[in-house]
Image (tube, rainbow, N blue to C red; front, side, top):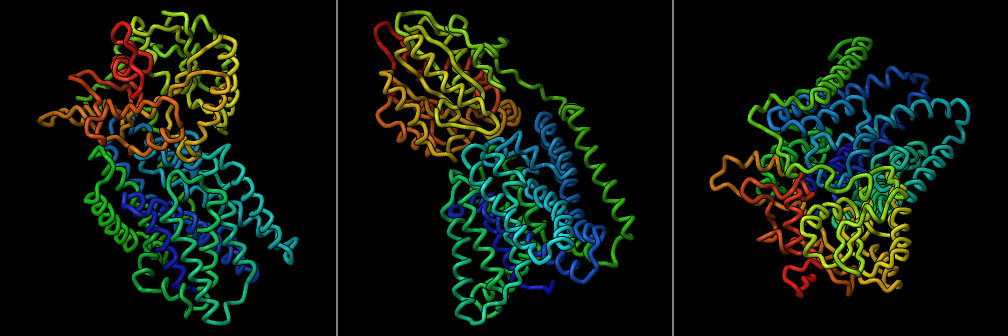
Length: 627
C-alpha cells in the first residue's frame, strides 16, 4: 500500500488520548477510545496489504508474519524485559507473581484472556498491572492469525463477493458486543469476538476500494465529522460509559471517515493529520503506547496514589523520551529488510525468544514472586488469626455460588431480638461479619448473613463471569418472605456498578419496598491502590509514619449511589474513615484495618461496625442510624 502521512497522524490522534487519560490529565475521561481507532487503522492496513499480495499473486503467510514480527516483536520484547527488571526491583512478592502471569500470557499473545478472567480494565487492581495494555496487542495478533487465512479462502472461493462475507462477520461481532455490554462487560471489553468488528470496519474500507472524495468540500465535511466523532467521546465518555458496543460506533466511524477523507490530502482531516508533529507522534505511536502504561504503573506504585498533575507531566515526558529511543534504536532498524537475520532464523529466533519470556514469567509464578528479594518483608496477616470469619461456603459463597446450601440456622450470626434483619451483598457486605459477631451484644436484632463474591445485591445484575448471581439475588427475596424479615441492609463493591449505572439498584429497592421491608444501604468503603500490607511496608521508614493512604476513587461514587437510593437511609463509610476526604485511615499503630486493598480485617471490621453500621446500638435505647 502507498504510504499516507495522514494515517500516521491518525495514529497520533489514537495514542495521545490514551496517554493523557492514563496519566490522569483532566478533560480526557474517554481517552480509552483511542484503542478503537488503532483497531480500525490496523484492520485497514493489514487488509490492504493482504489484498494487494493476493491480487498480485505474491501472497505468503511466512512473509506476512515476518513483516508482523519486525513491526511488533522487537519493541514489545524490549519493553517486557525492561518492565520485568523494574518490577523485580520494586514489586513485592505477591505483585511480582501476578506480574509474572501477565509476562507469560503476553509472550503467548493471550494476555487479553488472562485480564478478562482476572481483572477489569477500570478496576483498582488493574492500575498496578504494568502489562495490562498488552490486551489490545493480543486482540490484534489473534486477528492476524485468522484474517490472512480467511482472506485467502475468500479470495479463492468468492472473490467477487468477499466484501459481503466480512461485512457479515463485522455485523455479527457488533451484535455480540451490543448484547454483552450488559451481560458480560469484561468479556466484551477484552475479547476478539466482540472487538473484531472494529478491525473489520477498517478491513471493509480497504476491500471496498471507494474512490477518494472528488471535491474539497466533501473531504472537509467528512474529515471534520470524523474528528468530531473521535474527539467528542474522548471528552464526554467516562469509565461509567458502557463500552464497547453501540458507544464504540462513533470513534470507529470517525476513524473510517478520516481514513477515507484523507485520500484527498487537501481536505480538513488530511491537513490536520498530515501536520508534521502529528505525523512524528504517529511514527512513534507504537513505542509510545508500549512504554506509557508501565511508566504510569510504576509511578503509581512508588507514590501510592493516583498521579497528580506534576506526576502526570513526568509520565508524559518520560513516555515520549523512551518512545523516541525505542523507535529510533529498536523499531526502525528491525523494520529495515536488510537488518536482522534471514527469514527462517528470524522466525525461529522469535519463537525461541517468546518461549524464553514465557519461561521467565512461569518462573515468577512457580517461585511465588521470588520472596527472597525482600528479606525484611514479612507479609502482614491483618485478620488477627481467625480463619473463615466470613462463614465461607456456608453464608458467603464463591463461584459457582451454590446458594441452595444456604441455611438459616447456620447463617443467623446475631440472635438478640424478635425483629429479623438480613445483610445482603457481596464480599463488601461479608467483611462486616467479623465486626458484627464481635459486637453482637450491641445489635438488638436477629441478623442473617446472605453474601456471595462478586454479586452486588441488584436484582437486574447479570454477569457473564458469574451467571448464578441473578439466581442468588432472586433467592434473597424468597428468603426475606419465608423468614419474615423486616429490615434489609445492602452493601457491596458499588464501584463495579459504575459502568452499568448506579440506578440499577432501584430494581432491588422497588422490590423490597413492595414487600414492606425497611432498607438501609451502605456505600462504597475505601479502596487503596495496593494491599495495605505493601503500603505499611513502604511507609515504615517515613517520619512521621503515616496512618492514612490515598483512596483510589472519588467521592462521586457514593454521591451517585446516594442519589440512586432516593429516600432510603444511606451511610457513606468515607465520612467516618477518611479524615480529609481523599486519604483514608488504614492502620492504628501496628494494627491494620484492612486485609488487602479494600476488605476490612477482622479488627478493622469491628471498628467499622462501631463507627457507622446501621442498627448498631452503642448505648441502651439509642440506635445509631445512618446520617
